[in-house]
Length: 535
Figure 1 (cartoon, rainbow, N blue to C red):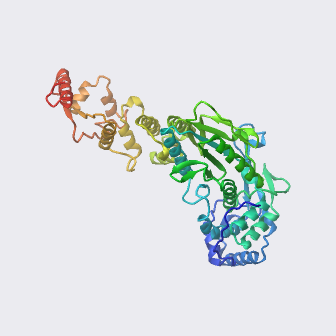
Figure 2: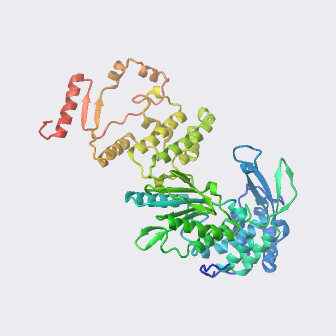
Figure 3: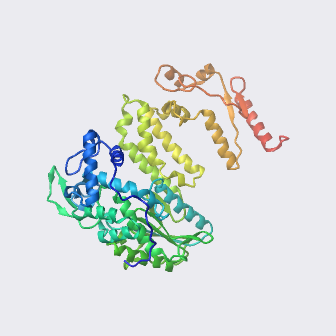
């Protein structure tokens, strides 16, 4: 392939693996993983003792020297898992491939040696399958770019590309050439080539195995090194297609431009020009075709920001792409008007669905509240706050999230609204002895800070009255119910009451009439407006 991409070399040993390296790979194996076609579980390898370790090391060293991988290691078992929709359609299932644990040890050794030198060579635009990188990095980058350009009303075209069956479509002969060209030692390439030379799969359904069928393209599913190899492919495609892109992309800093973002096979192209965007689409599509990979036009979308009256139509492989106002990128909603409200609505809806699916757990009173709290944080809050690091939120957005959170916490603690228990008391009960729970005083200070940041005055009025007076005034009989144990965490009785530290005004309602208390409030507000008390 004539591409002109940069040539690199790796300073890594190509000698056979040592026993210490094998021990490390065995430690990294997870016990509860399902075994491959040979039915040899990870626990067998981990608990095999010194004898198995010695024999396994000798076997791996022999494979390393001969560059011949056992054929049994090339076989995988595919288990179809239903996603959604009609069960009769194959597209509504995804396959989970089970490969030999021994083959994972070999590819793990190769991966361990190649990862560190490769990390310094991979494109910065790629965040998938990289240590210390994640979805949030690219979500944040894309949001900041769009917000900055939107503030200056600069036109921006964003195209989200989706490859059709990306992992299964890679042309292997081109992959080996790419690895050699990128500086991977020939020894490693030959070992991988041997592993893929006789690759075959069998499908397991209802406890029965199908006949083996040969797989001649794509990287092996379920293999530790497959994501690493796939990143080589994506790196080569984008680097080769956009290597002469000095004038393309959007400007980040004077002289620095960004043309694309990648998270594995999720590609984003950016451009302020329709002509430049179409040029990039043509180059990327042609380059991907050399690897046997093709884009799915129906899943590729265009987002135009501050574009004006005319709406250009973009094409990929001759197929027009749909223009949308918002797009779900890495599970986060990206809007053309940089509106975060839609994203928060989506997150609340998804968190509500996750919460409702665990309704049976929240209703059980024999389950400890501490366990419910842990499940709630792991399965609901994590969904609610996914990508929140990237949100330019306003006070109203925060209130929506807090209202949903408090509603869920009340369900966990079996506290009804009619119980008249404050949100702060609910949080203290659920997050007892946990740093997440804040005191009422901290909530008050936070509210004061929010008002002051918005340029609003905040007044804290302490309505003071003895407990016995409150009970006398209770026409609904709530105090009586609380003393009888019918209402839990009732402020002043079963839940501690925290008096304000420095209130702006104290109203002693047991000593003054309603009119006198109202007059005190008016005088305080008048003094706040005018030092001389004149409104």
